Amino acid sequence: MKKSMFLTLISGLLIALVFGGCQKKATKIPDATAAPAVEQPQESQINEGAKEQESAETSKKESTAPKIELAFKTVYFDYDKSDIRSDARDALAQNAKVMKAYPNTRVLIEGNCDERGTIEYNLALGEKRAYAVKNYLVNYGIDEGRISTISYGEERPVDTGHTPEAWSKNRRADFKIVGR
Image 1 (tube, helix red, strand yellow):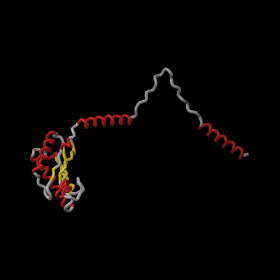
Image 2 (image 1 turned 90 degrees about the vertical axis):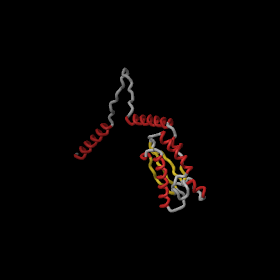
Image 3 (image 1 turned 120 degrees about the vertical axis):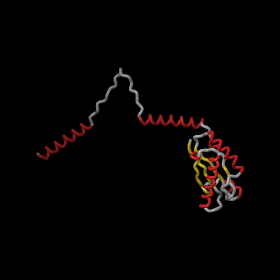
Image 4 (image 1 turned 45 degrees about the vertical axis):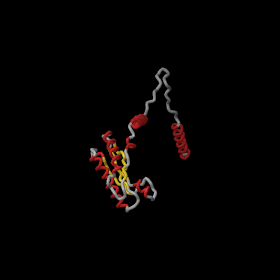
């Protein structure tokens, strides 16, 4: 008897749990006279929209900004030298004019060498070349604080050939804009 009473109690609890868990939730019936709900954008959607607008404005500014990096001329050097050649003076005068026309522009002067010589020697020579260009521009009236230098030695050749013509293209100082 106890056994049947226990089974009846368990059965009743199971039925209550099953039907109690399946109870329908009350649903709201929209009021026909109420104004339709307007979905509010989430904060992430607002931020994405702002970023897209900012990106579009930046692109517009960049497209209307002059492409002054193209106006900078590369300065070439003789073999194993860091002296400014006479033909490089014209290129440096042009670069100085560009920097004076855009007084907020900061540049990085990259000193480069050909493949001859040790890595250490070429890094030192590339540094001398970059400093020679920087000093020339400072003497021309450009603020020293607008010019940074770096040496890549032989690591960034323009021409990978192993000829005197290729080597002459790699003995150079390049200009990169690093800030406006």
